Amino acid sequence: MEKYIIALDQGTTSSRAVLFSASGEIKGIAQKEFRQIFPQSGWVEHDPMEILNTQLGVLESLITDHKLDPNAIQAIGITNQRETTVVWDKSTGQPIYNAIVWQDKRTASICEEMVSMGLGTYVREQTGLVIDSYFSATKIKWMLDNVSQAKEKATRGELLFGTIDTWLIWNMTKGKSHVTDVTNASRTMLYNIKSLQWDKRMLQELDIPAGMLPEVKESCADFGVFTYKGVAIPIAGVAGDQQAALFGQACFEPGMAKNTYGTGCFMLMNTGSNIQLSKNGLITTIAWSMNGKVEYALEGSVFIAGAAVQWLRDSLGIIDESKDSEYFAAKALGSNEVYVVPAFAGLGAPHWDMYARGAIFGLTRDTGKDHIIKATLESLAYQTKDVLTAMEDDAGLRLARLKVDGGACANNILMQFQADILGTEVERPEVIESTAMGAAFLAGIHVGLWKKEDIIKNRKINKLFTPNMDTATRNNLYSGWQKAVERTKGWVG
Image (tube, rainbow, N blue to C red; front, side, top):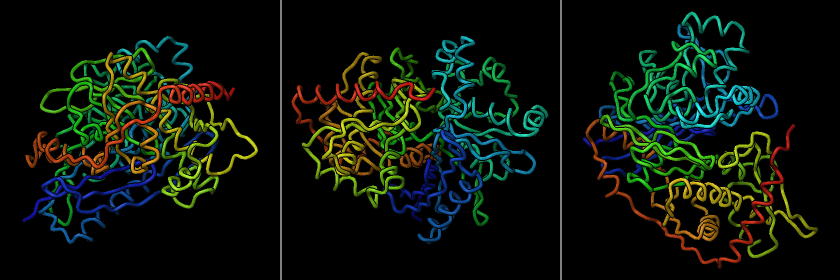
């Protein structure tokens, strides 16, 4: 019987299930988008039940469409949007509030309070993170403080917290497993990445009961069992989406880096067993943990990347589909320079300005939609350069080649501009589903289907983009971008 691994890829805008054969090839994908809820300016929510139903729905579709015998499914791997926070009632399984999404800005004032209390250094040194509304901790605190009776229930041990992986696993195992993995735990601002324990001081400072928190496991582990038509399928690999992509891109050696162009843009560099704290506004995170060995990474997070292209489609209505952006951008190549700074949710690394907002600069009377579309695409590449420059400085090395994945890396104009503005080769793999692939490989390794070497062996390059822009042009364009970014900072308040 043919053997398969299924990866559940629960993203910010859609839930997907991806079928992998024993040779590591993708045999099928099922996908469903779900609602983005914006109750107030700067607030972003998801319905946790909708996330669960779309995720289980695409899993069901994948199995039935491919007429899979459940016994052929060796394991399930899960990868997920990180930091997005769910709190639910332990006995009823009902969420007490919508999931507060990683992009949400409502807890900025809680973060300011933490900074004024002098917690910044402690947070950086123990959790690897910076104090920001991006991470889960202040989202939990907000729910406990603002949802009726939440604080009392949590104190009595009646509420559970989880990032999306935990929420899915708890439901898939019928409440038997309240677990997460080290990569997701390291995104909460509550997990000590040195001691590998929930941090007592952080829980105390934010008044979060420890009983709400899941058990933390390695990325390859027994997370519980999903029973499908009477067949017990182990959930055997879990990692937050960006760490999963780093693993799927086979960035196993210190100094190797990848950039994922998804809703946001996320660059991670493997730093091995070394906890490299950044002096340039990057964060330190756990890359994965296997066989008792923890590996770390430096990460730069750009909050708005592919979401900026969705903005062109959904809010401005100047493209019908995201892929049309390449066609229109090509028409504006070589023309006047317009800059779009998509700071819709503030600025991430290396700026960390919660109060920046989006703007367009350099408009003239002849500026048309082509220029704005091209500038929006280029903003992804500029933001990536901001992060890579900081990362190279922190790590003390020059990256020879950047591995890329995620939906927007299929855009040739964007990838060529990325190579040009970086002055570095950009390598696009044959399979750009690195996130799902990472989750599948983690699960497959745990059940003995694969070894790490198989990932390296199976990986094929689709295209290598070589820089062909002269240094003066590159410097001129980039200084214009830096000037534009400076002018968006501190816009609110």
